[in-house]
Amino acid sequence: MHTQILPADDPQSIQRALEILRAGGLVAFPTDTVYGLGSLAFDQAAIESIYVAKDRPLEKAIPILIADVDQLDLVARDFPELALHLAARFWPGPLTLVVPKRADLPAAVSATSTVGVRVPDNEAARTLLRAAGPMAVTSANLSGRASPRTVSEVMAQLGGRVPLVLDGGETRGGVPSTVVDVASGAEPVILREGPISFEQIKST
Image (cartoon, rainbow, N blue to C red; front, side, top):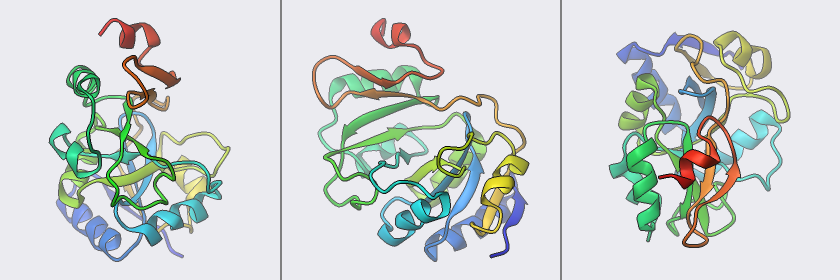
């Protein structure tokens, strides 16, 4: 497979990405943390191909990226007040909230009753997400390898495995998002600490 590289800030690049996504393909693109690899969130076969491209274990859930908080109800249900409170403070940004998922989300996203969701603080990513809708996105690396911050790092791992990489330069963060479970109880549970600390979450 030939991997095409296009500038992330070009409207024609977004159009090409949409064509690939709607045909069941994958697109790698910059976020505020690292480069992500994604498909449309409701395309079971495309999501399964993410696992293949990354050599990713099937038991690992894939988070959903959305453009804005008003897209949350497209992928989640009965989300607690705590989720909205944390989203209001930290979105867009490097915080993934684990919330009750909608029943019509494909099992390939998550085999459990919950799903991780976030709004990235990257305009190119949000432009794509506004056009495409919610996307299942994980880091654009081979499983177990370092998460990429540049297109060259993406290509070193996934070149020839995905049809398109949107080039937005080097990502700012470089550290995967903080993951917080707000679905299991009244108190937030930190599943992975990243750029947003446990202390910041608890003080919200």
